[in-house]
Length: 192
Image 1: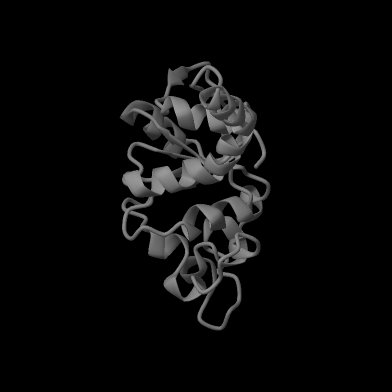
Image 2 (image 1 turned 135 degrees about the vertical axis):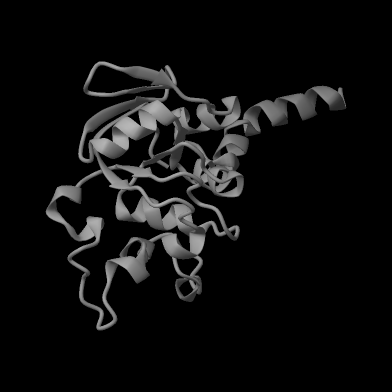
């Protein structure tokens, strides 16, 4: 997993509320157990027309969205069923962070475990982001602050263990593996 210290990127704005995990990655794409390749199915029912052609009206198919690593979504992003494939698809597509006023708990936990940063902001900051699609913003995980190009800077919450793992580029298993020497030393001391 790539460590996250700062993410500086233009934003892509999807203002719809209640974007659920089935919209993020439709159920028909859940037959795989690997993260690689899911990005091509991200928002598939919105990105593609019935004939499979890209929907030119959908934001991710427009040139302004190219290369963005930050998705600004409407309220209650990631609601619905627990589906780890949703953050996998966002990451495989190229996103590293999602910003909203509310991000569903299960989605948020899955995102954090896989290296996608969920950033919850206040209504005023969110409204500014929605009104300025493509704005270049900086998310600083070390200081837990989001900086806007207008000079505003706001704090965002993140659980301490998840923050440590993201800063270190570790998932939970990687964290446990990083403690193997300490565990072995403790066990050896207990045997004495």
